[in-house]
Amino acid sequence: MSMTDSTNPWRGAHFAKGRFFNPGVPQHRFSEFLRWITRREQGSWNGFSASEPGPPPPARVHGTELRVTFVNHSTFLLQTEGLNLLTDPVWSERVSPVTFAGPRRRRAPGLRLEDLPRVDAILMSHNHYDHFDKATLVRLLGRDRPVVFCPLGLAEPLRKLGFGEIRELDWWQKVAWSGLTVHCVPAQHFSARGLFDRNRTLWCGWMLDADAGSVYFAGDTGLSSLFEEIAASFPRIRLSLLPIGAYKPQWFMGPIHMAPSQALYVHRLLGSAHSIATHFGTFPLADDGEAEPVKGLERALLQSPPVQPFWVLKEGEGRDILEMVEAACADVRMLSGE
Image (cartoon, rainbow, N blue to C red):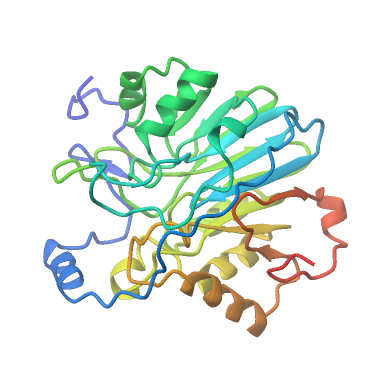
């Protein structure tokens, strides 16, 4: 069915005239993009940082246990209730339509793809190259044939890659899967793979609802009142994965990417028992330097320490997340997690 068809069920509060949009947020004009791209003041990035991959994660984590392993950028392995899920998997060297140009990886993935346990599901947040990496998806498909959860419009390109089991959801839709309830939640961002397809597909975050508390993957998003809606809808968030990078210059990036201090604000607003930083230090996508997101978060934490921890993990680092009742009594921990 064409997205312009009069019977298209995608029409709604965030879809009109064949394109999705962020309600109440004006879209940047092309002149503003030119202003940014021609006057860039980019922070410094080091060359490629080679590092030994982390140890292979456990094959499964059972019951109410929750383990998270940071690969890098926005790729995490989530393990709970005997299930293994990957967020926005990217193992490629570049995040670009071509392999010889575009943003290049500055840090090696924290895990080798072949060291992953069997992947049961993939959570896709949107179609940008640093989140929707076809080469990685094809490798995972051939290895594990996982189910894919995606926002509206991404089922078709996933089917073209060969995926058969796809759950395509709109904001605030949910689906039961393997004992979990998977919710598609709003994000304030945009989509594009080329010059002429801007906002033809939706963007989102994901909430995994379980008896032991919810797990929130925010995807890419700017600061918005949507977080108040998410907090009201999910009062027991055990873990949040919140983006802190690609936020400069804020006059241009602010509507679509949170600054580190804003991510800390969201951590508090959500009442998240634990949060972990995403979307930093791997690909030079905006004007903040390689170390700026983490340093910015560290300053914010020192100025106003949260009651519950907000961590930055090293590539390949895995961490067991306490259950909600235990987390309420946890000591305040800083970036090191000590």
